Length: 150
Image (cartoon, rainbow, N blue to C red; front, top):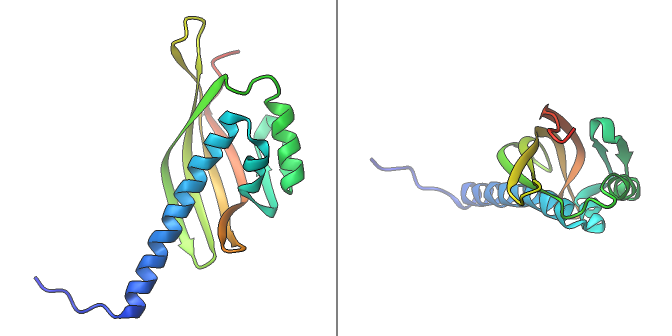
């Protein structure tokens, strides 16, 4: 079965799509990594300048400074006590914008040091390419299985 020859425009578009998807997938990973490490500067930098974060009972923040402040307060004294696994990304690209949904699982150590599921949920995102990099324009967190830690 032969395929029609691919011109340079098709190849460039396909390559750009792959690069965009890889960068967006890395954005999801960096979100969990920064959160777990307590790197709130790095965490806030994952958002567009006027990005918005909505995390239900934790609150709502707009702009990197508010996002950093909200997460610093929310996780004060808890850094290193939980770990996020990011999975099942679904991304729809549309030029310099995209939408996505990704699952997250939060684990913590129990009294014996064994891993314990604490929460499970999803993020629904609007993404934007800003200054040549993909960022969260709007991230909304949804909890599917609430905290088992009381």
